[in-house]
Amino acid sequence: MKPLDDQQQAARDWFESLRTRICDAFTAIEREAGSDAEFAFIPWERQNEDGSPGGGGVRGQMTGEVFEKVGVNVSTVGGYFNPEFATSIPGTEENPSFFATGISLVAHMKNPHVPAVHMNLRYLVTGKRWFGGGADLNPAIPYEEDTEAFHARLRAACAAHDPTYYDRFSKWAEEYFWLPHRGVARGVGGIFYDRLDAAGDLFEPNFAFTKDVGEAFLDIFPQIVRKRMNSEHDDEDMKRLLDFRGRYVEFNLLYDRGTLFGLKTGGNIDAILMSLPPLARWS
Amino acid sequence: MKPLDDQQQAARDWFESLRTRICDAFTAIEREAGSDAEFAFIPWERQNEDGSPGGGGVRGQMTGEVFEKVGVNVSTVGGYFNPEFATSIPGTEENPSFFATGISLVAHMKNPHVPAVHMNLRYLVTGKRWFGGGADLNPAIPYEEDTEAFHARLRAACAAHDPTYYDRFSKWAEEYFWLPHRGVARGVGGIFYDRLDAAGDLFEPNFAFTKDVGEAFLDIFPQIVRKRMNSEHDDEDMKRLLDFRGRYVEFNLLYDRGTLFGLKTGGNIDAILMSLPPLARWS
Image 1 (cartoon, chains in turn cyan, green):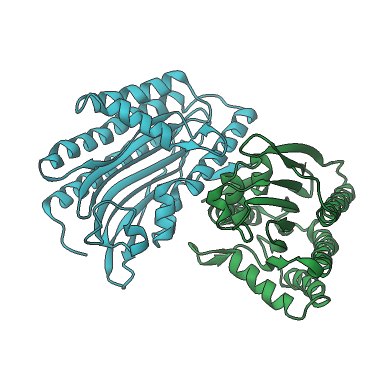
Image 2 (cartoon, chains in turn orange, purple):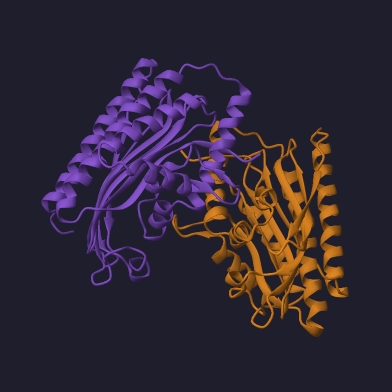
């Protein structure tokens, strides 16, 4: 893999520092619940099809009393797309080489009143350069005020950068996190964005926006967890949780671009499928 | 939907009678285990894209003490493929109309020592006519002798019709029921066949073969269930069961043609996803 340029290094460094702060925040919640759960960090390496080093990442995973299964991955990879995939990626017309660095997180929670959550931020370089990412909330038992709080925090992060971002990106999330075969949304949405131009002078403002999305997530999600983590729940709530997770599995295996892309390009299976819930039900 | 011709009606009648005999056999096993579980039979109808009647089916499902979740579907559908799919189906070059009748079955068992199983038989008519189907065994905890007995019975059914069938169709199953992203088989195989010509004089012999596959399944699977259904099992066995079912979900949502085809052509969701296990785990 080629040495990173300053922008690539800056993005990587920031994603890795966000990973550390998120893991610390989640571990602190475990302590409040009287658990001594810790993240295990498992590094993995990637090879290009020709056997050359293609970067790698670190999969962080914790099994706790509040977080039933949470994975926080960082990865920085580079090499060549195989021609079959290159056609679907912007900026690969003249050169199939790519660089990608990012963080991705999925948390499945033990208490059915605490929402699951997904967050992902990434910086891509081909012949073009862009940011992408987003965060969405996935409650088995939705609370209007949690949905409101989550969206409000992301709306504020968006508003600081561009008055159109929240409307565009929350709509994008609505469309993306959708199960057409059931005609239902995966969760209660959030934001999703991609191909946010990072060429030239656009790197700084759009990196700043991407960082603010990460900060918004780190600010709001732990608040929602703390609010719900001690809620009473019964068998009926647990059934709702397990059925809801079944829908989550369906989305990720049938539609999620990242999952399908990773599986078909020989990515790290454990890191890719880390998003799947610890237990799910199809009744 | 057009009236059925004699061959279509004969295939449909036989698949439906096999359904009844299988459900009776499975219910008898529940009685031996002291359970009064019964199949619920839920009819569903299908519409073509233009709103015209497109046939339908009956989803049979039982939740018992031995069969944790078993679904037995029969369906007889007809209409027009939409152009996007027609290209992948033989015999639709001149006319996109199709007819299909079949039975499909998936059983997920409570005791981790009893294998899950899948069986499917179908008769298709487009500009061409053909049979397809197969059966494969999916033990979380494999026993060599069960695998042997299952394959031996299918081998005998094949041998009565064509000396090449078992080798070809068991190899086809090996290739088909494979998870490339993990480099593992879904289970211990069986047979899989498709596009077995049913034109003209070939209808009778290949219908006879298809019936014998159904009979072989009905003969051997209950024997394996009875042999293992009272096995002792512990927490470790249960974990193996739930992890194994995770792989089963991955196969069906990522690769199974029938599942993806059904979801993308607006099939009956409950019937299509009946194959998914009652509970699965990704640790």
